[in-house]
Length: 303
Image (cartoon, rainbow, N blue to C red; front, side, top):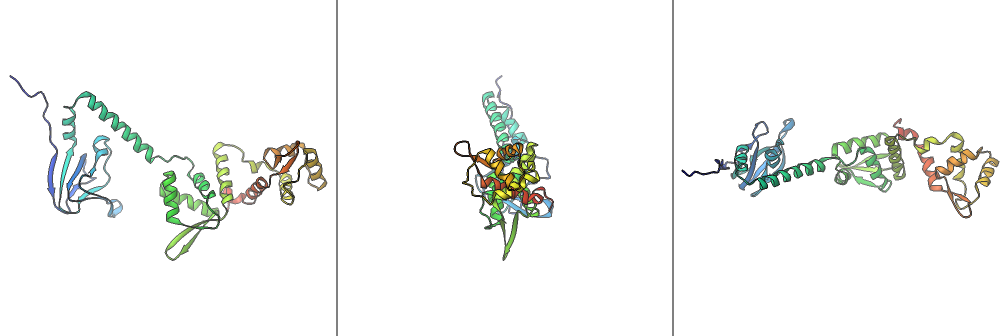
């Protein structure tokens, strides 16, 4: 007696549905792959009592791949927006097909499934740990006192970093509380404005130091050193002197400084090496530290 060695295969279900018919509901425990052959389907988010159409399906579109292969629940209700023809592949149907395919093909499918899951996980994962620092650094590259449409600002930053929009909005509020940025309204539109792009970079550096568990450089300055920095802003940055000459000059100006304090200022980059072992003032670095000192309360969130 000869019989069919293949096990019974459960075929997909092809059916016609009327407009308004619920093809799939998240409340059901079934896992299905739905193929639209004719017509149009819509995916509806009904959470929170709302009815938000997330996307539309056209002939040839498929939904439920992750639900069937990855056992990941389909979050949306699938409805027919017009009379349609659909093909439904159930879990039982898939399992009956898998029992009859070659082992090598099954291994390929499993490998593709794993790769798909990893790709989806990576695509959803935020690539940065400190989202506030990332936003501050982004703002540091914007022009100061220029109005940027808020929605476009959030959308572009989200696209660049994959940080969720809700998180971005929370970080924007943190910058607003510190008075680093401002919001302006023009008609119905909101705009964001960076007050001082340099300050944004300073804040980013401050947060990085916190993440590293290190003492942030401006916090290493004592009162005498801060007074020296203020005086340096009145000098020509092209003036060059050797270290002993700078120490002698500052002491003559009533700014007490010894070799140890000089080394600290040099180490912080306030003095740059010039010609023949001479040093000149790095005004950009001096201004960086003075700005950090001036906005100390804002940086710490104490405003």
